[in-house]
Image (spheres, rainbow, N blue to C red):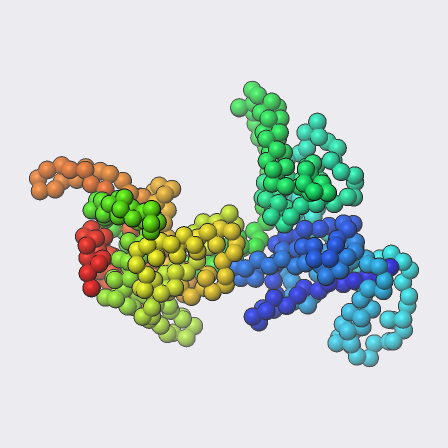
Length: 442
């Protein structure tokens, strides 16, 4: 038996370090070749690291949330044969100290021997993660695991990810798939049983005191979002301008277009109309379709409109980019936005689909709210926020009529965008939306 050391792989594109966001194994687990060992994150892309060999986990090289350098030790496996510990150790010693004593690498190890004291075994990450997860405690009827102690439950990465998100310990879930593999149906059955047991246990406890506390580490995409928002607010002096838009005619046009063409071309939401209005308004105000390099003191204005569309995903806020929005008609825009949003939600968005935006559109309208103060996506200089549509009585030519109204809450970088230009930009968008025929006039 020998020790095989797996190092943090080179993800590419000049990346020097990654964040460890999830372990799929723990010390003592048996792993097979190509089995996923861990998930690591760089920028907004999550990458799975598979095992190149078959063996048993001896130790983990870090815990969830650690930032690890490319080439650092990720995991140690006990394998049949000699392993690669001597080669890796010799390479490391040669790089660090060429004059190291040759006897060090010649000391034999007995079968199954743990790593030498000079390389202390890191603490496995799983207990730390379990401590901060609000995983349900198995019920009295299911205290015993559904498989022998030490036997690793079989499940696909997608099933493991879902179980992690739901706080389910797979060791207790019976598997009905081939070779006892746990399926999504098994998770659904476990959840149903858990809800029934919880309902029976908590009858009459509507006003019972709750003193439990849960600590949730800020890692992965959540950490990236936090860093991005902090950087934006630290660097950019925001000011927000709010305007009320009468979208009665626009909603009427949208309903008619959907009635005529939704079957063949797809359904239109308000977003494609807003995107088109922004494209046209930016032709008149190019200084707002820009990025500000405040270190160099240079504002770069763009002819192309690369529209970031903020999208909420299970992992957190992401901003897929609608590249060259100026070239898209309403239906092409709607289809591309839907495609990008779905890719972001499933974590399949490519790197270039998440970068390069020149201005951002964000919408909380579906969740309600009449005013917001959106944070600019640094290094852009503006973000347009959409609030919900409400029907209210309005005086029009001496009569009270029902109109559909919506607020635009938009923020600007006051270092490079004056208040007058910001107001004129939003008023230009307002003209296009309140008279939607202008959207189609060149």
